[in-house]
Each structure stands twice: as structure tokens, then as C-alpha cells.
Picture 1 (cartoon, rainbow, N blue to C red):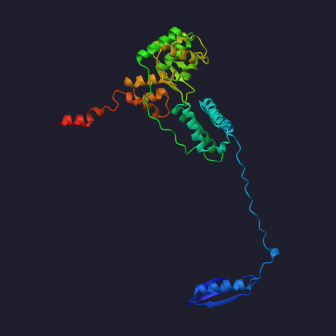
Picture 2: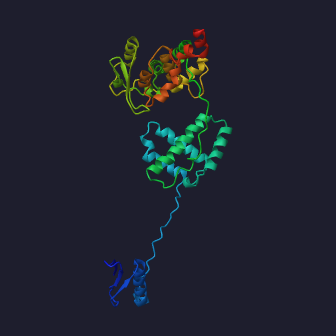
Length: 347
């Protein structure tokens, strides 16, 4: 069955289909030839008996099963699949479990942005700091995003449309040289736990986190340096110590085995010493202020920002840049390139 154009310009309709009588006919146009073919086939085809018709097979209907897992269930799954591998995974899990409880442990898929914003209002009215809540917001949002990426859940993050609360950026607090001396006196004269002094000294001398120092082992001391392991960024870093202090530290450590801890847990002892010192510590920065103090004095005394990044173990230079303004030459061109100075120079 086909329509072909002949050399004389006419169109030949050639119906040659099984079950029909063959027919050939000429037409002036292609459209007429094709229309004839269609009409002929329709007029001469026998209807298909109902019994012979192909059975209609219904498409299978996908069963939609509601996700009835609670938020607490998702927290447990998040920790199993991801949180356990984070350096602060235990702390995040406790935080997420607390949020779940305060929200009433709803079905994780049923949480709405409106419910979360109402929860935020309640927490902030209750006295929670904005920065603290932003951290918790980030943990919860990251949990949903991670589980969606792992295909543990098949719905979107229910609070992805909720913006974090913007806060005014503040200069990080740090201790003066006199305040450091006052704090060390409070530790030396009032702490029964000897480890407190050594941990505080190392934090102030290297910018290390309290937990990194408190868990040091003998093998991490070598050739006048400390190598920090199991850090927040999961990278090791090595920081040198003052030679005289290093000798004193080795004397305190004594003959320990490579895997023996150097110090006992002493954060409680340090907090009590901080309270006795009379220094006004920023909220939530009792021991962490030693890290800020090291970094601030490092830059004040002309340290290099990239060196500071390596010493602190920051994975992102953005974090280290919080201290950049303390450098002696920070934005120094503002002195000679401002319009008053330029006007005086040209006058």
C-alpha cells in the first residue's frame, strides 16, 4: 500500500492489503490519492469480533505507603548512617534528640515550616541565644538533607524554606596578657588537679581546643612539637612549643607509654578556676577563649594569616579571617588613601 508519483505527473494509489481486493487508481494530486486509500480501507475492512479483540490490561496502580517514622526514628538513622562518623556526632545526636522531644516527636514527614518557626519563637522567647538556635536549625536541616541524599527518605527537607536568623557579626573576645596571668594564678593556686595547668598552658600556647589537649597521649609529643589527632577537621596538625616549656612538660609527663594519656579530665577544674579569677568570660566561651586568645595575639604580633590557618587546623580560610583585622597592617592603605589625606597631600 503506497502512493507514488508517475512521470506524467499523476499520483497512483495502490491498495494491496491482505484481506482486501487489490485496487490501483490514478489521481491528479497526492492528497486525493491518499484520501482514496483511507476511504477504501475503511469501507472494505471487516469489523473485528469482540471475542477476538485484544484484552485490555489495566496498568498496575502503585501503592503509596505513608512514611510513619517519627523524628526520633530519623535521628537514630542519621546517627547510624552519618553522625557516627563525625567528630561531634554524639553531641549533635543529643541536640537532635532534644529538638525531637520538644517538638513532640511528630512524624518526621509531617513537620511543617510553620511548626518549626513557632518552635523557634518559643525557644528565643525562653532565652535561647540566636546563634545557638541557628546552630540547632542547621543540625536539623542537615539531617533531612543527608537522609534525602542517602535515599532513606523520599521527601524534601520540610524546613528548607526557613531562613536562618541574621545576626550582627562581632569581634571575637580574647584575654589580655594580664588576664592570662591572672587566670594562670587562679589555676596554680586553687586547682588540685595538676592537669588543669598544663592543658590550659598548651591551649594558650598553641590555640588547640580543650578536648584536643585533654586527650593527648605520649606519642603525640615529639622533638619539641605536639601533633594533634582526631581533630574537628579530621586532619592532623603539628605545632611547635617553646623549648623550655617542652622540657618542663616532659618532666611532668614522666615515663609514660606511647599510648598513655598525659592528662586527666579537668574541664570542671578549669571552669571553677575561671570563676575564681574574676574575669568576665563571654557566654559559652570559658575554655574556648584560650583558642581565641592565642589566635588574636598571633595576629596582633604580626603573624601570617595562612600560618594561623594551619596552626588552628581550619579547613576553610573564612574561619581564620575573623582574626585578620588584628594584623598591624590590616587595611593600612585607609590612612593614606582616604580623601582627607589625599587632599592634604595635593594641597
